[in-house]
Image (cartoon, rainbow, N blue to C red; front, side, top):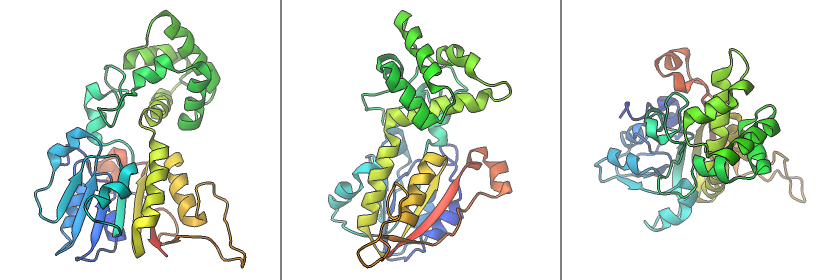
Length: 299
């Protein structure tokens, strides 16, 4: 399945789960199934439940009696598992972001490399796509998306250009958007600039950060004491949420204490600092370059 998606930090992430061969585990980002296959290889009598909202990922289903693939967004983690009678698990793995397959299929609209219609939906049945974000959002809404999710400089000016342009005709394709914003791209940093623009729109289309918050809070509830949370993130917005929940007990990053001064935490850190891919892995898979792996254990 490496053509669909090359699993990042494969051994490090699966080792982080500290797998019990009889245990119950969840891979909330199935994709090409690379991480799932490695987890299954360590189970003997246990079970792995995997999630993916992209219908195309269903083509990679693993034929194994110890495996169940659930076609849903991981924000529905608890309810989906309850349908299978599962109320608690021994470990959960999440490899966040966009799969290689989604980037490499031109007509999905995720990549700045290909000309295609603007789409960017991870769930192709969803109503909101990149075209609707660009062509129906008000100027201040566009500004907030670009500022909060792309961390772009001059988000107001960029939003103004988009808003004015769409008054004349809809912005339909990847190249139309790039041509419209090319003057904002710093010299020698065009790729980074457009990657930030596309990241912002993609996060909005898929409501990625809210989905991540929902999933992490549910993971807190369903993990057994001693169960492991393993998360691979690819940009600071994701990593900050994961880091804050593990280290501070909430997403805001403000440590809370009870009346007696005890820290209100659900996890203890297993990795003091995030694990990064090796130079060798980055050379083999350039998309691993921004990955950060954090491992925590349910208290």
